[in-house]
Image 1 (cartoon, rainbow, N blue to C red):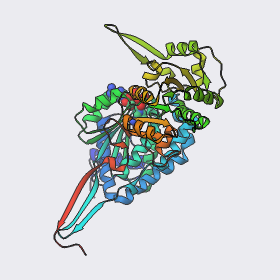
Image 2: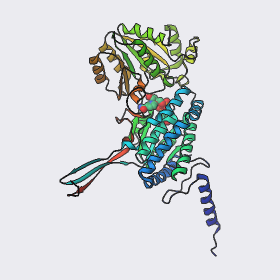
Image 3: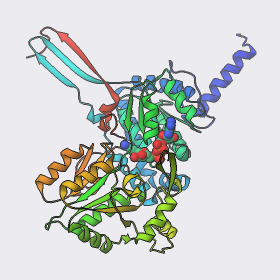
Length: 482
Ligand code: NAD
């Protein structure tokens, strides 16, 4: 009979407990890094999460294309089935945006591209056969925004796992609890169906330190950043390759065209700019109306339920939602009061002592082009409208207000030359003509969706291919069959 030492018995007990806790045995070769007790993929430390995700990546490699497709299917189905519960939990944690739209965003995960997008490219000729394939990076560090915490994580998972990668998320602290819950439930389901553990990891209490630790982890081969200017700057300084889905401030230009249906224009602007109380990075943030279209647009916005603010009301709200700081030397800069980001229109109107119908989706402020509401990415359901003398002038104002983020722009016009001219001038990643901004992500327009639009680094609306390394394999000589 074999005698076990006390230490050996302890090891066996630890291993059995870990198997019970995680539901499935760890495949051989996976690092023995544990997530928090009872929490699949949820970690205190970014370094541990990266090590565990490396194990997840190696397990996924063994599971092959079938494993990737299975995980994609699990994540899409779970987002759809849990949309109401997760949407409500995210809404209650973040207290920003609109519950119905949080649910809608989770339903939208069905339209994120998966494995089907990774088609290899083959070449065959007298010299033999060459295949070009999209290979995974390994572990990807993903930074996600508070504006769409679970949808961004879910969309990233679909794209990244389809491409064969594992993920560690450092979510925004304001949306970290709903992120941990979704990651835990994803992993639990993935482990039950495929046996793969820790494919998706998250930091339970993310901080700037955990961001730095994640970026420095040797297992993390690539970063995917979705957020504002500060995090994009920080990621670019890490020395790691970073795919950056950065900030925007999308203008919408309304042309002076008799043929335009101004009520449709107004509905599009209210829907796009009002979606989730204007939390979308692609959302209409300022309206620039040419000539007579100014009054026509304003009247149509009113007919479609928007509330037009007086000058005094606009100024009262501006004073509360922006903190203008003295930068010295006669310079000043505005800091957004985060308490009003994604706030309901009624909450914003109340600042000015205005009581409005709780169903109101949009406030409109008549402003000049250099107004703070035009210049700042305010992410509130309050759109400034600016008058332009001609279409060219409107495009100039639009371009200035977009700050060369090259993110998104919208236009309503029946003049083909104007539509083309603005598209060329703006040079944005998304350019939507005669529709709401959401049409650019396949909602009301053709195409697919992603919650990470890599504007700063130029990869565009992310797909599985964004998260792959391009590899070529050449077989020399006449082994082709024709
Ligand atoms: P945010 O920049 O405050 O935070 C985004 C993420 O970065 C969070 O996880 C946050 O914790 C982290 N972060 C912020 N500053 C950091 C720093 N200095 N170092 C390390 N990490 C840091 O943005 P938010 O309010 O969560 O989201 C809104 C912003 O994100 C807007 O600017 C919006 O345009 C942008 N966004 C872009 C896309 C896109 O696809 N391009 C999608 C969604 C949101």
